[in-house]
Amino acid sequence: MSQPTFSPAQVLADTIVRTVELGVTITDAAIDAETTVVWCDLTARDPARCPGCGTVGIYRDSVERRLTDLPVAGHPLVLLVRVPRYRCPASPCERVIFNHDTSGLARSGTSTTRRCARYVLRRLIGDRVTVAAVARELGRSWDTINTIAVEATTELLAAAGPARLDGVRVIGVDEHRWAHTRHADGDGYVTVIVDLTPVVEQTGRARLLDLVAGRSAAALTGWLAARTPEFRQQVQVVAMDGFGGYKNAATSAVPDAVTVMDPFHVVALAGTKLDLCRQRVQQTTLGHRGRTGDPLYRVRRVLRTRTELLTARQQARLDAVFATDDHVPVEVTYRVYQDIIAAYGHPDPRQGKTLLTRVIDSIRAGVPAGLEELATLGRTLHRRRDDVLAYFTNRASNGPTEAINGRLEALRRNALGFRNLINYRLRALLHCGHLAL
Ligand SMILES: [Zn+2]
Image (tube, rainbow, N blue to C red; front, side):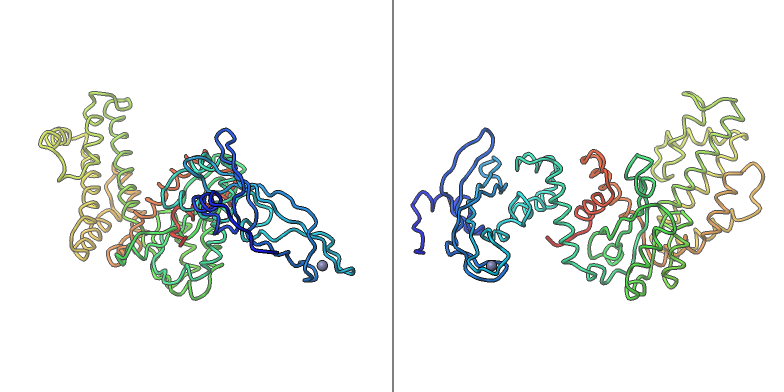
């Protein structure tokens, strides 16, 4: 068959839509409401060979393949590609009829071009637009775009392979609720595993390594057990919250790694105890829950503010509250809370460690009666003492893990809740996993 000749209009259309890279040429076009429709022929004109026996096929007729492509001039684009069908002339062959191969244009069984998948990823990751926005641009449903994103992410993960975990020395572990239905995987919770190595080495941002169902020792143990022995050996630090399950998992699966209890959680824990103490003293002194005008209620936020950030007025209000004998338990708990913050804030980690050691030792045992909250805090911090103090040597903070949790929350909001964990995991990895596109 002779080489086709292209009309100037065809060259123009093919250039604008860049159909050369698709292996098609535009033969006609029309506007169908919001969508631009173009008819195309394959540029390859030689008859294809039979996939069964390799014999050159005999042209029979053609079928039309409908494919969504990249939007043009702000409108969804649909290609109607004429695909030749052939008859296999070899008599013993079982393939009687076969289509010209268009797998380079679009994967078999799909209705979007391959470059469409790249476009979806670029829009979602590079431009940080929502699936709904991309769906509008392409004139397809949310589910179709989500499926494209999920499948493309699976391919990116497969392409990255185990090398994705090379050089991971510091990991952060946290959990969050991903679904609000009782029957969801992991009772609606996931354990989040984050690579903190770039943060600790100050070479980059934290990245999501994986999400697994549930928030239990088993969730983390299972994930670590499924990695290579090399990976488990290279993990030196595991940062986590106060949840004992993760500690047990790390101790059993990566026994040589140092476990670090995160400063955010230690401070949050102490802050909660301070609130509980204030509420209890409020109740015993005034006989009711805090109301506007009650002295302790008025300083509830001031108490949780770092001392050096207080205005003179706030400081005076605080002093007035502490002048009352009945409020002594609040003042004592407040001092400990502030001492913990000061220890973490000390510019010299060794000094910080000394300060925090002193705090933990001071509330470890023999806390006077009437300071129940502080006694509980003392027991917890003493039990996790090594993990708490390990922060000063390793500086592995779970702050970046929390940040990734926040971004995943936004993802779930935009997706109006994920219905299945497989999709959620892949979309989360696409958004926070730093996969090379
Ligand atoms: Zn054949």
